[in-house]
Length: 357
Image (tube, rainbow, N blue to C red; front, side, top):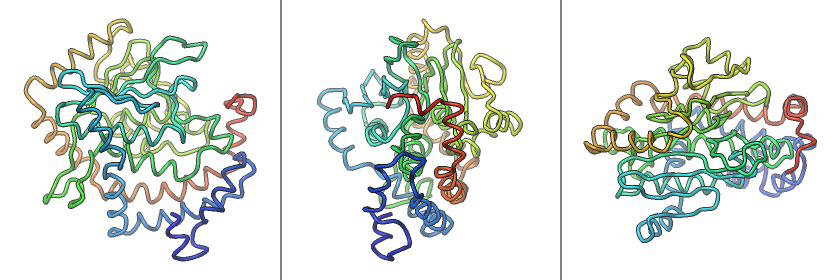
């Protein structure tokens, strides 16, 4: 984005302009980052430039090489808000933001993508698991939670930059779905495939917002019988990532609209919830259920599992469909991000002005 600002002054905001805006609460920003959304919309609308951007965003982060080295020597890597550990043929990625119910924000995104890269690239494991860590919030202290979506308090306080949304969905969330790209070829291209492995999500407590979006990229979802899913996008005033693109494939159009536009809660252990969740287990049996699933998915190797997930993906969401969706998303999310309605929604639905950072 800043290279574009240097190449053609006025096209997108400069680094200095964005840095100045970053010091302000969301309600006081001028919205200079809207031009970033408009620019990215046009980049993604171009088949050549858009494919290049999608490809580049799927390449491994530079920090992943060091993480892989440490994983090889220690069998585990602690990246702060993300931790990865080998367990037999599986690698377990635990996402942790304990003070904020494992919510995602600007402080978690880089560690998460590095952990996803290392988990996928690890040659010693055949399957990856995503699970939320134990949280500190008084209401849930000592419990695991899958995650509360975007950190709404940080969003209200102006601590989530616009490009965070694109960095997230074209980065680690897309890597869950399509794998880590090789430099020489586009993902799913006949001349060279991405590096990928099946992902299992383990839903303890709840999967709210962005964490519900993540479930739509997973190969297998295990949920606790007391867990639920929500996509409170209308209450937040933003677009819920790629949920609008992906959720209809799971639940159909009507339930998708009810969840996104009318805040319908989906209980995991319900007919509607089981359209997304593959298996339900009692909360105190989640560990044993997870191990059984890992054993079942790895007892015959991962080659056919990886090939089948790729074949399904090519049919249901080709790269160009993803690119075109995010072209519209980039523009519309930019306007949502700086809309007065976002602030009003967060004040009314989240009581954001009274919450501690």
